[in-house]
Amino acid sequence: MERQTAASGIHRLAIPTPFPIGRVNAYLIDDEPLTLIDSGPNSATALDELERALALHSRRVEDLQLLVITHQHVDHVGLAGVLARRSGAEVAALAGLAADLGRARSAGETQERFGERVMHEHGVPAEVVMALRPSSAALRAWGSSVEVTRALKDGDELKLAGRTLTVYHRPGHSPSDTVFWDSRRRLLIAGDHLIEHVSSNPIAAPPLGVDGDYNGPRPQALVAYLDSLRQTREMDLERVLPGHGGPISDHVALIDARLRMHARRAEKIHRLLADGPLTAHEIAARLWGDMATMQTYLTLSEVLGHTDLLALQGRVSEGERGGVVRFAAS
Image (cartoon, rainbow, N blue to C red; front, side):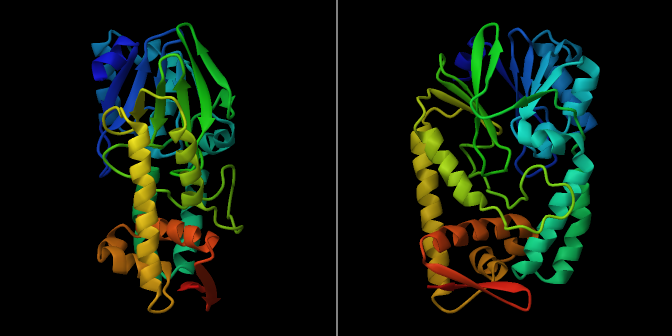
């Protein structure tokens, strides 16, 4: 399948990251304009590897003419600013994401403050929240600002000489998840919307474009993600090119497995609540033990996504006491 993809003029460049997920895929589209989808994190190691990968295809950073961004996470967008400055390439990303990419530092701080609010509200001890601050600041260092020169919206088309990519907004894993569909080749470049070897975490995040503190309702990431998956399931696809790992040949089977997994997890949480009300952090601790502290925000986001689903079904209610939310089986 890799050879088939390369024969269509798309080359997977696997760029190292410092994160547990491992390498991230950037995709070089050998077309006019010469296009790179995603970039890797902002590190000298990632840049060196990207330059070597480009050289294998007789290309340089300076040859790039169009940079396309699938979503806001630093492992996908961190090098975009460096690449844009060196190449002068146009930078295309979802319109709602453009302002955040232009002020990456303050956007990262907004996410951190939002995350701390969510953790406090859902029972994470204050000392754990404080202990996570250095790692949050370190994560921001792998990103950088980049000016978006072409703002995309759902349904737009990116026209290259040899192909047309239709733009679809598929939020959930992040608010900005964007996928690119080549209908003629039945191919989808999907970022982290769909990955074969791991389930994409729907991470609790503020809405796009917020600058400063966000005190509005928490967006329901998993609810949005499942809706996005169902839309992708209906597409006529032969291959999905994900942000991590190899190509996906049967997106319907994979999406069905993901939908079943989330349904099972919601049921498990509902059973836990039968014994009495719990905070989201307490639920995470019962599901994952020490991992709920080691990966506090990821596990908390996972639990909140499923309590959102159960609440929509009328099976869970929430009550607040002393600034902390507890969930109860209805």
